[in-house]
Picture (cartoon, protein in one colour):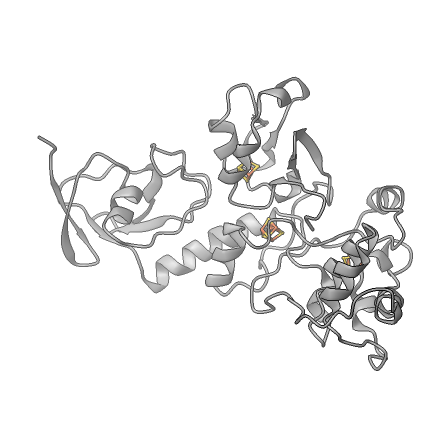
Length: 323
Ligand code: SF4
Ligand code: SF4
Ligand code: SF4
């Protein structure tokens, strides 16, 4: 016979099984508790601290993923204090996170053209698809060219010639008329920022991105499914108040296996990929400087499916058209 336990949640008595972590019991009872590092089933080591709730008996904030419920517990799951502490946890994660969610060129385009995706398809030689994304819009009147002023390549050497590329597509009559509505980004969502490039990074960018447009393809492949971004948006975060502490290189993309890639500067060290692989991803170091790495000899042990467990865009599957 399974045991039933009674606990108080937000001043209401509920019955739980007592067999799972407090996080899972609360979710089972229909409460929405955010988390980035829990695998949903097992007792956890509480690395993200986003699932905090208040133990009203002790007055302490506790990570619900690493807490076993006990009979008679009194829990609070939502208050100004809890939201403030969860927000601090998110901001600390973001301060150690070096990536752009959306490309700056796309964010500033007053016509809503998804500039980075147009340039990406242009570089792949997929000009008809690139023109379709421009959506029949015309940049010729946009004399201030905010996209080119915002372009990250400008801080390396010279901005991408965005307006020329779009003009070339629009005036190429051999391409079908691009009159589909352009899908731009949602400018209300949180946008992570990479900060300044270091001098060695600038040199690497020059070498690595030498295709026709010289675009760095700044946008994150994970931006549409990233849980870190979703939670930061829900918390109303515009930028982390803690400043950027990450020293990890921008867009250092490590090929793991098949279509699977790993970008360490986007990793929040939640440990999901480490705990779900045998002789695969592993932690290196301890404390604040700890990193997740994939030793060369372990790469063959990793399956592409592992990308689905990553709460950020650090692990992703690359296809030719992914951008
Ligand atoms: S480098 Fe490419 S993606 Fe980045 S801002 Fe410039 S045009 Fe946009
Ligand atoms: S991993 Fe998430 S938060 Fe980071 S750049 Fe990508 S979408 Fe933005
Ligand atoms: S790469 Fe691994 S440790 Fe890093 S955020 Fe993704 S799942 Fe978590």
